[in-house]
Length: 193
Image (tube, rainbow, N blue to C red; front, side, top):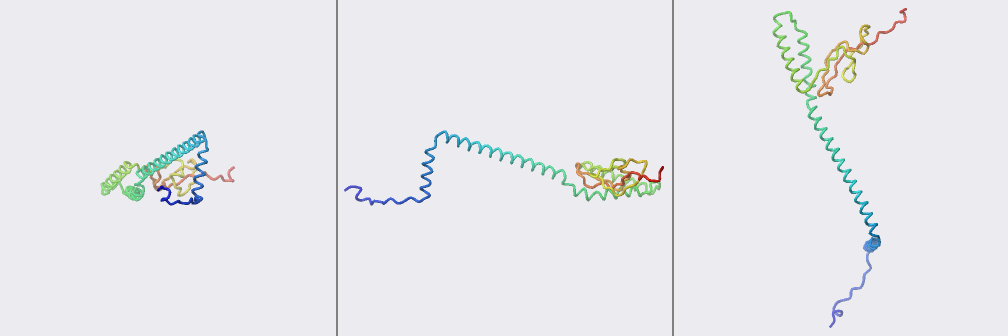
């Protein structure tokens, strides 16, 4: 007995179109030359290198951005707290101005308030909070808020002549602008001759 008699013959079935397309593509790939394959691989390698470089640059930029955000969070975390404390400093300064220093009964109270205010300023200084007291300086809209204008001949125009309320900065960032009075140029009267 032969083995052919016992094994049933399987008729060839037509291949599905997807398999035929895959075989034709493999046949076409076999027809490409090694130089073309090498060029394709080099092009793929260059594209992969470029993608890696872009990804590394994106990661480095993200890292820098996150470091800057964390640094700013540390630097300016106290901004709101400082803003809430500034009215206390203002009130201490006003109370010192209101005390009659010539009266011996109020002298000790005035000294106590002055020491309290000094310690407040020392603490603010340690946390990089600085006062903006611009009297006599040129007006700077980035740091000052003009409350009124005064016409003064003896003062240079756009000079701060009075400070209603000091401003403050935290690490160079404005927390509160200084409220100021600014000198304006004297109006020229047409009657002058």
